[in-house]
Image 1 (cartoon, rainbow, N blue to C red):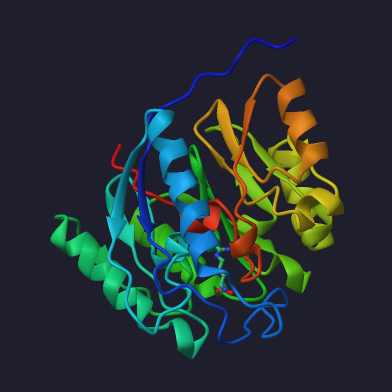
Image 2: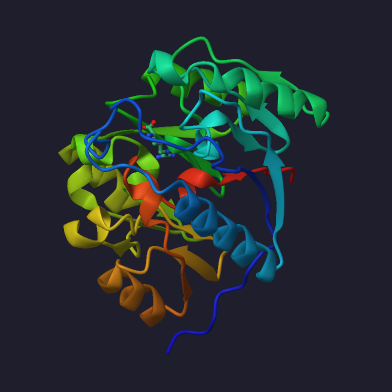
Length: 271
Ligand code: ARG
């Protein structure tokens, strides 16, 4: 059994799903014939907040705005590295007003905010892993935004091409286990990007399609505890075998919109 990896306390920004719904379809998960159970969504979201707090993390919240049903996916509003906030510019017109709310929250909290010039969906596609930032493109965030983020945040940004519409955001196909390693679903990436990941992370935890479709890669790790979808059973076993502590949290109402734990969670990295 490998020794247990160490956890680091995190600061998270989240948005209560008071107005959460599926009212338009901008990814293959979203369907008008699968209505959202709002009460259940609120309870699942609260359980996620309670889980983070019980693990010693700080959770702050952004006020939900009526008419913005996807705002619960707080990860998309920005990416924060070293206290610098690189904001968002959504691909879908329906989500564009969310950026204003996010940028305002950060300004209010005393951060400088850079508003991207090209399409950029925050941590949905920009995933910091220690000294580098992995950057997805293909469906939402543009490569131009990767360059812009690198210039503003001063962190080496590695472009990865997503090829499967079910995994339209990088954070649906990959997550950071800690500052050195990741878990991912290889088939969500182009052949070249797969090779890049193989070279960068030879010891990565690899997930299969079943676990990826169960939103197993939309997990949140503090370096030791991994908040993970309970139905991603194969991945849960692999994580445990590596010494991580899987913490299953059911967010099935949010799967109807194409998101799970990570999508609901933005990390405010001030160090
Ligand atoms: N319905 C939302 C969209 O398609 C889900 C966003 C999920 N967020 C994420 N970080 N992957 O934009």
